[in-house]
Image 1 (cartoon, rainbow, N blue to C red):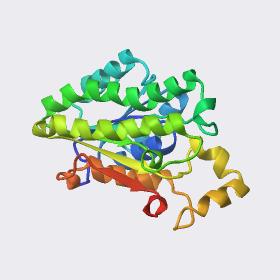
Image 2 (cartoon, rainbow, N blue to C red; image 1 turned 90 degrees about the horizontal axis):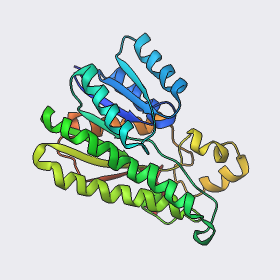
Image 3 (cartoon, rainbow, N blue to C red; image 1 turned 180 degrees about the vertical axis):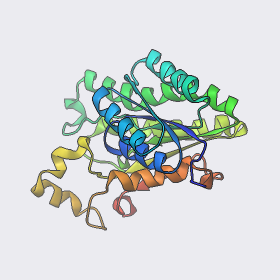
Length: 251
């Protein structure tokens, strides 16, 4: 048996980066995959790749800032595939390079709306279906910015810190319903959000001095940790926060 045989998973931000890597890895491990995001073309390309490899996938375009989309994405997953077992809250946005007093309120509100309230909306929509299914796994994609102070990231870091707190509360609230909730906190990963830094050799070299393993991560490496937390192999794991960062937060 594959690790996610018979599981129906919903992955937000599934068209690129970590979300797309999760979709591919999950499908390889037997899951039916529903991916959401704002870029319809990217979603449909990932779904097509999965279907070409004999997997099952559904692309649902929309934003986690829209309550109706959150409810619709879950409803479409259940209507099409019969149930929902796994939710990966990967949709996210970044805001970097400004001190707190330079950060305008629109940016602050955007970080909370996408990174934190978006996860709340998706969990709120998914939990009733997971209860019907007899349990499930929720994995929130947070950041090392929730664990250590990183200069000029106040709005982003606050939203990810809130996500980790949300993770612990959801784990406690739904443990009796066999719904688990955990966070992964990636360091610098080669995704579109980080492309500006990764494609700047001088800046990247300076950042890498904080990483004992001396390199940035890949979306596939993060996806494999998320796969473990989504699978029944982690059945005794809930309310936990997992750094995956080349050792960056270990010192």
